[in-house]
Image 1 (tube, rainbow, N blue to C red):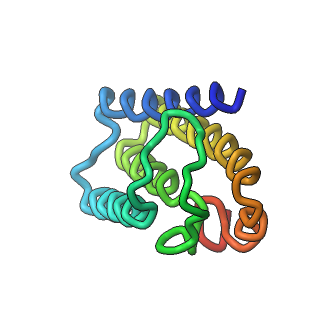
Image 2: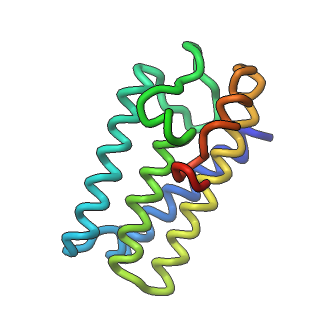
Length: 144
């Protein structure tokens, strides 16, 4: 069941991003939006480099190699999802419309489906995750 929820989450995230792109709501000529999106991409790249050679999975699947708690993972448990949401929502706010907000909400729903699925499996694989989760926020440092 976790795999189905995780795959559905990925599809929701892709659908939200695609619909925003199609609706011309993902990118903006605003220097502020561009700056926020460059920051989001930088965080995503930093997180991928920190995570190492572990592959991306379409469904929740903890990888071998231990729990990663360095780099951006010191500040949030899910920096890649955080950076995707930052990129998406910068575009939404730069091109504010009812449709774009709905597409942004799709990405949030998808990200949370993936986060919940992944956390359930990571807790089983890495018992130290509970302590890490107590000290580290999910998506926004010091907040959430």
